[in-house]
Length: 196
Image 1 (cartoon, rainbow, N blue to C red):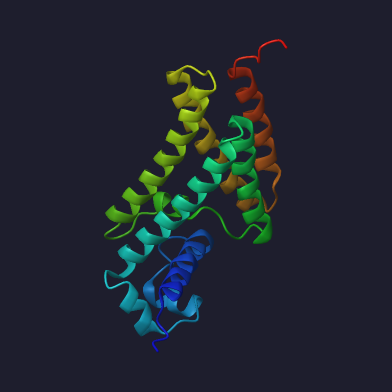
Image 2 (spheres, helix red, strand yellow; image 1 turned 45 degrees about the vertical axis):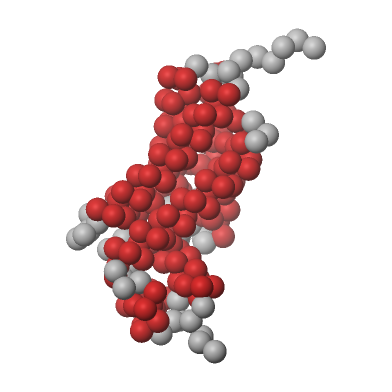
């Protein structure tokens, strides 16, 4: 029976996402991924014949989709629980990595790389999907469509920026401060519940 399984492939994608978040785009290669994941180089190229652009694109899609599903689940309870879950997700990731791991999408968006069009497009698509989901939820809870779109963009941009500050300062304080202000803004934007 072959040792190369879909689970092994998925572990490589997850390892690539972690590596991007920790080391950045330019320090991530198929060869380095094999070392990082303790996987045979041949199997890594077997799964990713398109090389670095393919593995980075799939890692970005994996992260984007995973976070989308978490936000979607939490937004079912309303915009504030969704925001809190988004913040908690990144705080946990930062603290569990001793502030060494950030957002892989941000690494792809911030660094220029050869043949980076596909990974960059995947990052843009993931960010847009998060914004759209937040915007739709805000609209469904009574926020005007134009304001909902702007608020969703602000939330994603503010959280991503706070992640960078947390990594630089090696503490969660920027994310806590940004989260507190986003909650105030969100509560002010949502219509007051009907008097009961």
